[in-house]
Length: 54
Image (cartoon, rainbow, N blue to C red):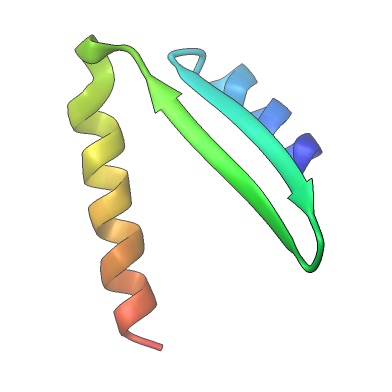
């Protein structure tokens, strides 16, 4: 997860990624500045839609 977050940060430097290990799950918090909030919201909406298709 950390490797993926690092590669994504190199690609899209306006994202910040925080990986939090714990038990059976790994948390991944993604943040952006206000200028890029719409980009993050659009990605979250796409992920939610994709999750519903399973």
